[in-house]
Length: 476
Image (cartoon, rainbow, N blue to C red; front, top):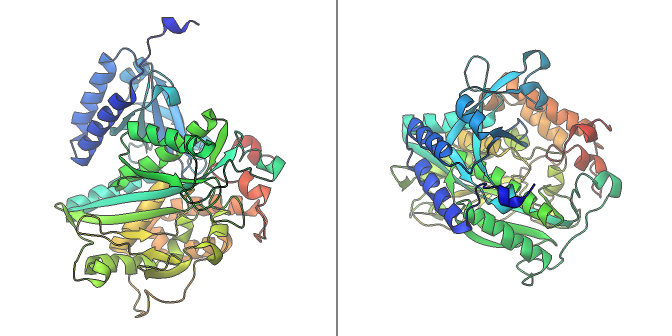
């Protein structure tokens, strides 16, 4: 078909950035949902060059799913978008499979046509049960309702920014082929900050950063990380639900850009033994009426009493929520003390082996950094567990809580046992969803060697929830 016959939407990157920043400002200002919905529907109606709307949602484990709806169909049926929930791991049983998608119009994105295809826009969806209520296993909806409730009750705005590390490997589908090759090939061995302009890693980082910028990420810095072929592309903080959405987009962008360059972007926590793994350091703060509640110039490390109580609750429940922050077999390779692993359940301003770090900050930037998060965790579950625990969890009476020599589990089986036995995780997810999550984690763990050993086994990649597809799963 001739390209000249097509008139699908393709916008310059600077125009995309303006549109996405304007949408981001509306979200930050809490513009009423019905007003934003009306604007977006009018835009879709008037913009003839848009052919489809990509709706994104995440399953219980955090794997991103995308459905493309024809624009004309969506305009007629946007309030009744159904899909088969039994096909999504952790969602409904086959006998009760119908679920709906409610479009969260405040999370609308214009995407670069050269990366996502011309004539498409993106919007995140919320999963709705048959009775019209938010679906319990859609953790994005759970997080959104929690954030709304604490804002309406206490005036709290939950803020987060994530530092997400990844690896760039030679060849496409390097993870899916790992059970055949048992190795990953680096594209660069330079290390921290060291990469020549124009080499494969730098080209990838530059391209992904440009896409992020165009989608309103408000980039801060990007660079190669400590390990060979490792990267990190930092961007500004946002409200908790938006921050989790951004994590999903970040990984999607990196994977898409890498594939177009003939490579693979991997967010396995520890794909190669003997070098530093991938983390997703989660920086969080709480504000009220524009004031950062974490800041106190006279507080210990300039962290307020409110902030220290937040930290103490995280430390108290550290083992309870570890599975929510480190959700895969491979994640427990990263919690290795030889490679700056944040596996100690304590808080420190300097020790990077601590689960929680107190970074240097000021009245605007003061925050708490939860370092023990793997980049393959469900980002909505990470935000829910960190913020709800920090605000509403219990506090141990142990006077040495912040410096105690306690450790996070070094294997997923112990993490599952801690998670399953904790009353607090039932409060976080509800008994039904908690049980489903345990079943999924056990199913993955039981397909892998129980002892991690000294090299990455094919099974821990093959049955990893972000690599998972039905064909690979059925090879067991």
